[in-house]
Image 1 (cartoon, rainbow, N blue to C red):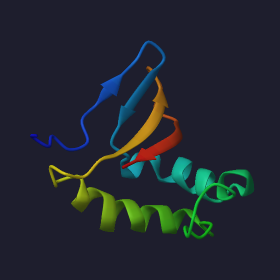
Image 2: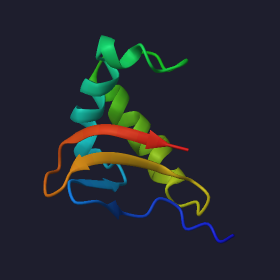
Image 3: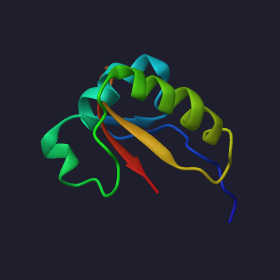
Length: 88
């Protein structure tokens, strides 16, 4: 099997793509939401947007260069608001 890494995937309504620094505020809002936290094992709530910036810049951007890393931000098609995340 050939690994292709996190490539853009699209449906009629959604676009799955890499999370970037432009999405830091949205990622912070998701990971500081109590309802979202109920379903996250071991990921502490974000206490500020700086945590999201650090995570994206120090972890995601490097991991996205690996062909066997899969982590998508979920976006409504045509919009740049991060509404969820899928990681394998």
